[in-house]
Amino acid sequence: MLSHQRLDTILRTLPRLTIGLVGDLFLDRYLHCMPGSRELSIETGLEAYQIDRVRNSPGALGTVLNNLAALGVGLLAPVTVIGDDGHGFDLLKELRKLPVDTSHILCAADRLTPTYTKPMRPDAGGTWQELNRLDVRTRGPLSDMLTAEVCRRVEQVFHTSDGLIVLDQLVDENCGVVNSALRDTLERLTHQDPAKLIYVDSRRYLGSFACGVLKGNRSEVLTAAREQEATDEVLYRALASLSGKTKRAAYCTMGEQGILVACPNQQPTLVPSYPVTGPIDIVGAGDAATSGIIAGLLSGADELEAAALGNLVASITIQQLGTTGKATPEQVRERWNQVSASTAE
Image (cartoon, rainbow, N blue to C red; front, side, top):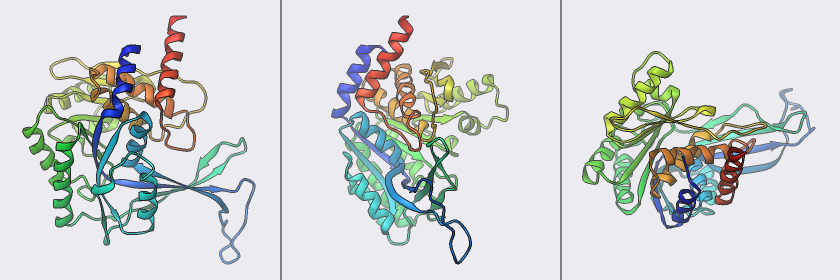
C-alpha cells in the first residue's frame, strides 16, 4: 500500500514541515547497572544498585518528538508544562539536541517534571532488562492560570504549524496538560480551520474528544466507544463509530496484525504489519506508529498509505532493545527495500 515513489515523496517533504505538539513531556532516565556487580547496603541489607552509566531521553510526548526528529521533520513545537527542577534541566538539555522550539515549554515551580527512572541490568545472555521503574510526577491538576496559558500557546502553535499532535498520556482525569479546557480549545480551533490536521492519541480519554483524527490501541478504542466485548467485529464497529463522531479517519494499532483504519462512511480496513524476526521490544511502538502516520498524512499520503508508513516505522523501532527506538530515513528506505525484495521472491 506504500509505493517507493510515495515513500520518497514523504521523506523529501518532512524537512519542510513544522509540527506542533501538546501533551505531557517526560524525562526517561535509564540507569545502567554494572554487569556482574552485586553489593549490599550495610545499613539495610538490601542490594545497592551500582550504576556506571546514566542515559537521559525525552519520553511520553518526547518519544514522538524523538521519532519525528529522526525521520527528518524540520521543526517541532511542543506545548507542555514541566517543573523548575533538575529533571527539567536535564530534559531541556536533551531537547536542545533536536529541531525543537522550546519557547512553549512552561516551567512551573509548583510542578514536578514527569520522570520515568528505569534501572537496567543485563541478563545472563547480555540482554538489558528493565527493573522496577520509579515514577515522578505531580498528581494534581494544572492551575487555572497555567491551563489558560497552555490553551493560548496551543492556539498560537496551531496557526503556525502544518498540523498538531495531541498526546494524552496520563490516566488521571484532568491532572495533565491535556484536560477538558484543552479539549474545548481544540474543538473551537477545528471549527475555525477544519482542514488543519489535529491528531489525538489518548491512553484513557479518547472518547472525550469531539474532533480530530483519533488513534488508540485495541483496548483504548473499545473503551472510547463504550464497548464491553473484545471481538474483532466489535472493534471494527467501535473504530467506525469514532471516525463517524469526528468525521475524520480513526486508527487502531493492533500489534503484529498491523493498523486498522476507519474512514467516515466506509468499512474499516486492516493495513498489515511488516514482519520482523528475532527479539523485539514494543515499548514506544505506538508512538513510532503515530510518527509514521502523521509524517504520511502531512506529506500527501492517503489514510491507508499513512498507516503503512506507521507500520514500517514501528517495525524498525521494536527491534531496538532496552530503549524507545527511532527510525531514520535511511533505515526506513532499507526496511522498505527488504520487504519489497521478500515480496517479489
